[in-house]
Length: 501
Ligand code: BES
Ligand code: ZN
Ligand code: ZN
Image 1 (cartoon, rainbow, N blue to C red):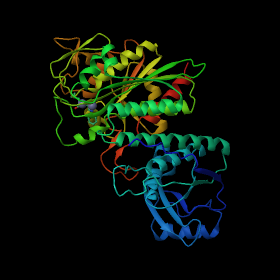
Image 2: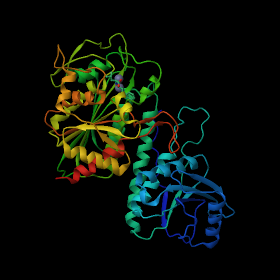
Image 3: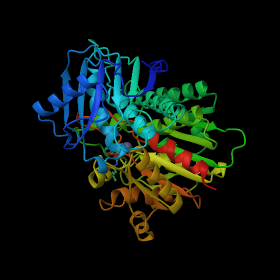
Image 4: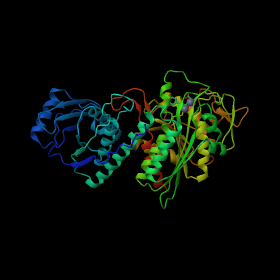
């Protein structure tokens, strides 16, 4: 089942002017109200495009797409991509529109694309946004369809037309990075989409181990006995109801001369039935994506080490399956955690915080400059922010700002929720140091309040990706299922963190 990582290394990216179109497809951004494309040099093509703009009534509205065939050899097809008002376009908008075109083109057998980079944006960043969006949009998951469509059609060449401001080497470098990043993001989307009868805790640990091998990183996978020996009470309890043994994965990327250490912790619940506090059947199938935090950490480390970011990064991934078997943990149980603190279990469905707590306290042994955890932690976060932003909460202003900036830059946006000390009351327990749930109110904040207890005074932030890691429905710019959200966010956060003093 485990697939070889798709290599898109041999996709050629050609940067050139707009004098001559050399691709089968021309993706042509159209801004609102445009009647012509003044930069076009080829008069015949320009006339044709003016005619289509008029006769097809193309207005250039954001996300308006028009696909047409021509009599030319190149371009044989033109996609008019409505961009909206020129002055208000963001790189994130570009990514989305690129996603739409990528999804559209992935259904056709086209080997080479061309994108006309128009507008006032920085050419490098715009080119990257186009490439990342295209590759993200062209993704589909057909692993278990017996009559397979050729799911990952290969793009042999992409032309970027209209480059004349920035140096081509510069842009080429950015594009190489985007291509690498997206090939990894799409690889990890496969891992998240894989059903939990295939992607068991031991399999997911193997994914991490294989990545570490490829990147020559130190990696240790702890099994049940070792986890018991370490007294990781959260991981032991949550995994108790399943025949699948838990794993605890530790990966270290340690470049020579590093100055700072960042610990990344990712929630790896390969399936969350809720345990004894069982979930309703509707939507339970989706709970195979409850390990998207884990893949975000593994994926980020994969790219961080490829790009040789000058920062020591430790990845910690607790992996379990949450089932209501005969030896499952139960509401009312009191657990002794790795840190020695005790937790009263109110709901076995609030399992993510229990396994993360052990990993967070374990991470303190590195004396990190910061710890970030990422998790599909609460349904409440989906209610609060929907699918457009992940929740972020934490104890360190600078770290949170860094994550917010990384979110704006990558399009993987985050929105901060408060973590005022008044909320601490919510998880007070009569019988233990704390309880894992304190009622229905402020659900996402409660998760963070709980985790905060396990990081001592280390600068820490928590990212809740419950709403962003998965799309229930097919979108115009992407298929339903895993989004890969979090990988780029952590990557850029790590880069920024390496630069701070
Ligand atoms: N994995 C879920 C959170 C989740 C819900 C992720 C929906 C993605 C979509 C988590 O383990 C959970 O079940 N949380 C409970 C917490 C509650 C018992 C306090 C929830 O959100 O309902
Ligand atoms: Zn749960
Ligand atoms: Zn869960």
